Length: 217
Ligand SMILES: Cc1cc2nc3c(=O)[nH]c(=O)nc-3n(C[C@H](O)[C@H](O)[C@H](O)COP(=O)(O)O)c2cc1C
Image (tube, rainbow, N blue to C red; front, side):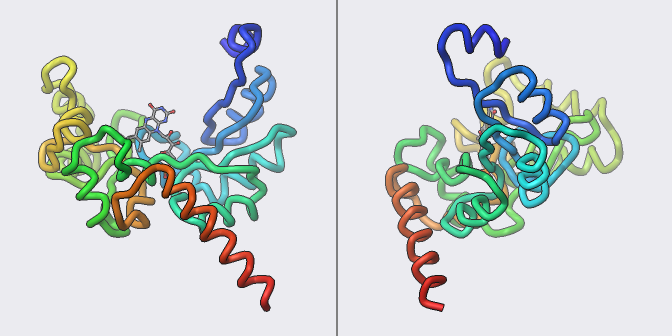
């Protein structure tokens, strides 16, 4: 697949969750590796490596540029990623509460009102992981996971009508009770709805302020 994309003149980024995957991606000829840690929103690598450990391990193992993803939503996260050896970051959750993002207003409101324990990991019993906001639905999935009730998890996920799964209900219809709105731990750092441009500007300006503060010491 990577060869096909490269032959078509595309730049290929590959998301990894451990060193073995990073080395395989490098061997396949990708241009850049994205290390996505356990903090991130959406589907996760079952190894559950955090960004803090994954990024430097991959940086040490590969010769390609590395981006850090998972748990980064402000200037502090950006600079931490640089310190870990990343050359940039991939942010997802920080952009959910932007004017441009087409998710439902209820979801954006829930994000800006959220805190450090706002998300939950589900579907462990199925051998995969998915991080979303805590809702009645996702907490029910978590409880079934705890009991190892994989068949019940499957049944609950399959119970939605086609095209209207729990993620759609949460993200697009704003159902913060029976939905599964995918989001990462970094929602705890998102305090207002703003433009995507301002998200980037604020991160860059904040980073500059931190660096200036370091220089004064
Ligand atoms: C709502 C949502 C949907 C996502 N969908 C995908 C996807 O389809 N494919 C993918 O590779 N990553 C997906 N991601 C992961 C992001 O690309 C990104 O790596 C991640 O959000 C970074 O971590 P953060 O959420 O802590 O910023 C998604 C993330 C969120 C929050």
